[in-house]
Image (cartoon, rainbow, N blue to C red; front, side, top):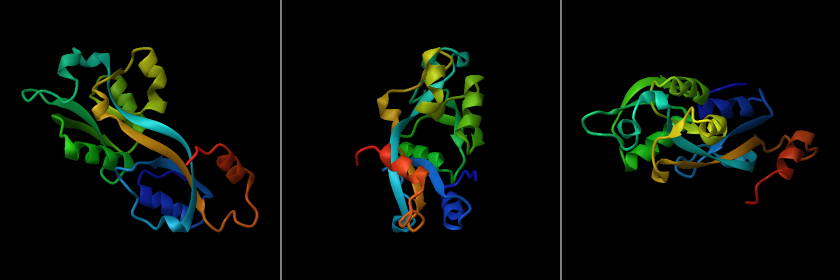
Amino acid sequence: ACCGRPYSCFDQLSEHNCDFLMCYKSTSVPFTFDEQLFDWVEIGYDRLLPVRSPEMGPKRTSTLPGWNESPIAYLQYSRGSFLGAVTEQLFSSRPPNLTVKHVNAFAEALKNLCLHGAGIAWLPEASIRRELEDGRLQIAGGKEWWVDLKVVVYTEARLHQKNPSAAWQFFQEIAVSQ
């Protein structure tokens, strides 16, 4: 199952439409459901980074926090998406000077637009590592604009208690020390 909003993803898990849900987790945007209903394990880390394409022109005109005279074109996550909530929380404490050019719930869609110079986007580092290395994307702000994320796997609490699946055992084996 594929979903862009965290609560519909957890609904899929609760309704037995899937056995596992792999997603990001952030201390800045806690989930509001009862986590006791699910077992979960942290399997890695990632970071949400503000990035730009060199096609946007000089770095000084498209680097955070932006200029008052000329807001930076911004590729925004949809409201209700988890990464949208993470970026909104980041902006609540330090609002950058941005103008929304496109909205989408999916990081890969925003990445494609970003690669073509449509604006800056906050993208998961794991999905843009190659583009950063070869210069097709550049960091568009200092570390104060980066957001740490945990990669977690959820499963229904009762599903693996008596007879854990090989997949759940694997996730537990690769778990990050908590």
